[in-house]
Image 1 (cartoon, rainbow, N blue to C red):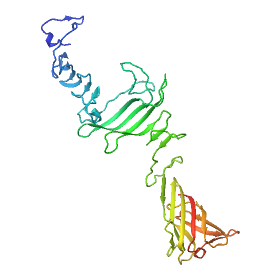
Image 2 (image 1 turned 45 degrees about the vertical axis):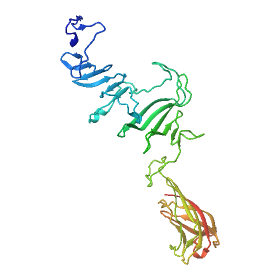
Image 3 (image 1 turned 180 degrees about the horizontal axis):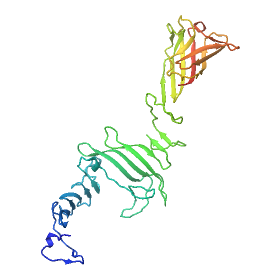
Image 4 (image 1 turned 90 degrees about the vertical axis):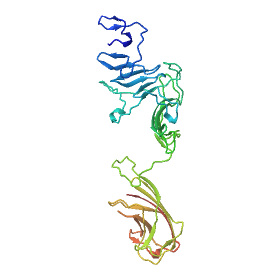
Length: 372
């Protein structure tokens, strides 16, 4: 160890190894970043110096690498504490790391655990309601235990973009600490974050809401789940990959033509699609059946039925003013977007119903469920 320059005029005592020893208090010069007052033999630009009153700084290779400022804040890579977090001028954390390097590797803080068991590295954030160092005063329900805040510069100061934080989620006791984990993001045009998702002490996931419903499921969502406009089908039989609600336009045809056929303005076709199952609901009131002839069918189903001999029956809720002698049936065929309407005799003979079986005021109310 080199002898401090301000002690060069007297001979200190030496220990058994020949190093100087000092008795407290020992006063050193302030030193500089390039020539610190406490340094090492053969490396005089590395050591400890005091750049200003009540401040200790550490120099490495003639450049400052760390300091403890007059407020007791530990600064790494900065000489002045930053106090512009949460878009204020008063929040200055006790430990700050700030780098100006463009090297991506310099942007990380790492904690690595090297051990032969299953344990890993950990970051501990803790809270007590005590007012002194080392206190273990019990916390209370909804106390925030810790948070990780993500902030970006808005040109003036730092503004929070997102936050992950934990709260006490119940009444704590001895070896009993119920907790929740919460996730918040800041909306466009805002300067503060809003909670978007929560995992409660019971393991319930809440999205868009902060309270559970009675007898609710493990996943509770306030505004529903949105699926893509085009289904991205999953090969997993236990995965719900699509949900859709909408309207469609049912069209009655005779012999494949809809010319001259008109309907009441209140006619509606609705559908709900869940995975590969489609439910359709229809109300059609004819104002004119037209003059076309041939087999009757309703076209325009919102999705093509599944290929491979999947035939679906149609529930006929009300076909009034139809003239037919036998049982009326309707089916959706294989790979089809139409419903075929027929009558079946007691002997099982199936016959198409045609224009002649309808009246100008015929009402068709029906529903169907089919695979796609």
